[in-house]
Image 1: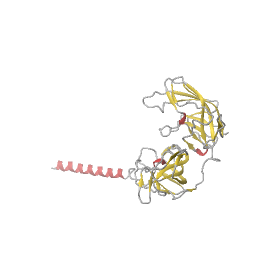
Image 2 (image 1 turned 45 degrees about the vertical axis):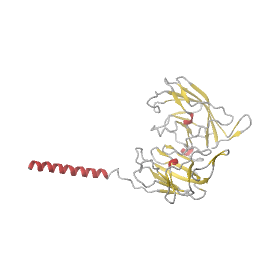
Image 3 (image 1 turned 90 degrees about the vertical axis):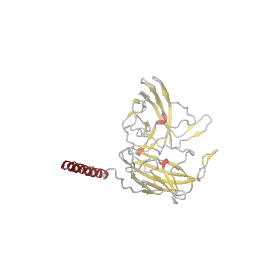
Image 4 (image 1 turned 60 degrees about the vertical axis):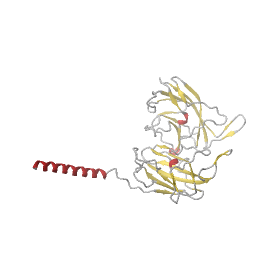
Length: 356
């Protein structure tokens, strides 16, 4: 009996130790963080941390400015009208900046919409009305980078609020991190914090080239398991800006943002395996670290189109002019635009742009 009592005592002590250890672990990092919703109206700016998201990504901080809200009952091209399914297109102008120390993904197209009555739409994004570019705001933001554009939602009524995070994104708290209060009429406000007068962008690591210079990079960090790596050589022959282009009939086209940037390129696969290159995968980064994902313009009037985006066999090359629509002179083009989303430490290629 004495031996049995000894075993029982040891087992009891072991169970107590396990319970104490489990309680100690439960008081640690698994505890739900305290979350206070950042509520913003038009013209207001707020910051929130992504710490409450239950993903495996490093935490970062986003600064959001609500610049404008307007409503439409019809969009699309003049001869191809597009009407909202629910009642209104809500056009919400946003400025999104990663003010933290790690890359972070923000997708306002996935914001939930909630009415004052409690009705919710888990997915209210509308696609696509005239000139809407969905990737400019919906992207992985490197630290310090920001973007500004308009997101479009299809909502049954004016007013309500947009909530983040969306339902599909796991979170350790049911409290929204962000609530954007929508007015019942059109409204605007909030000053532009970047652009003219802002400091020049800080160039990350990567192969850097300027006009007249070649650069080489390997696709080793971007290839999938079924595609061998290869090496591309990029030569920038010239760069210039234009305020407009004209075709042979005298018709004029002007850029949407400010300048057409014409970059004459030679792209050659100098490796031993085929490789894909997509000119659409360039992003533009300007003063104050403004970031534009969708900057390539395939077909301005009077400009010949060069098919850069294709699979390059070993030794194959393409020479021509790529046109980008940018808001100002200067900054740089980086390739590929989704480098941070793919876990890369820096882009493969940076093309430094002239200031004039």
